[in-house]
Length: 182
Ligand code: HEC
Image (cartoon, rainbow, N blue to C red; front, side):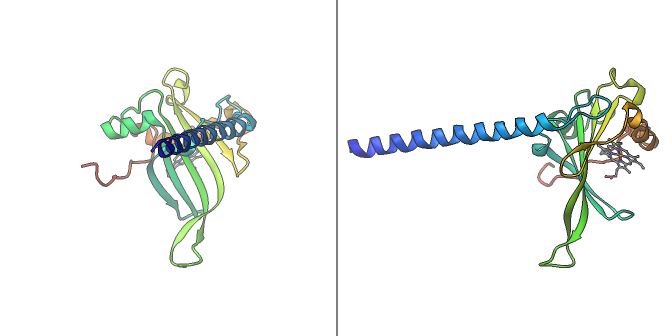
């Protein structure tokens, strides 16, 4: 009886120690990864932890054979759930991850993500980014996340293409319906 208890005890301790180690490693990798990525020329830093954000929608671009996932940070997802998207609240960050599309070898009629093309972001701050509709724009290219653009003015290119969407706060994406949310 005594032995069982102490065996359980040490097992639990080991599990806890392992969990702490895993957390430390995860935090460590995240930190070193983000440390090395240069900010965009307009000063926007790569948003930390975007890989773990929730899905807002997906899209395909038939003109350049790419497949996209649109993700949102906590503020964005809360706004989606509450249907409060006009305007999206300050603190919203939307991410769009773009991959070249490729054929799934095991099932050729299926199209899946291939090489990463870029990761791009829209950061809502209605005061700071008032000149570009309240959104800060930034993009990082390829798997090494090289900042896109030569100088801060690159964001004008983004903003002018998003301008036709003024009536939906410059955002093209309509959140996809999530089953189970009725
Ligand atoms: C030639 C037009 C065009 C340009 C230039 C452009 N975008 Fe977009 N963007 C779109 C379209 C169309 C969509 C929606 C379709 C899709 O999912 O790709 C979109 C979607 C997005 C989204 C998802 C939110 C939304 O509005 O649907 C983000 C984030 C984004 N773009 C960031 C950027 C950034 C950052 C730049 C500049 C570095 C940029 N875009 C430049 C056309 C453009």
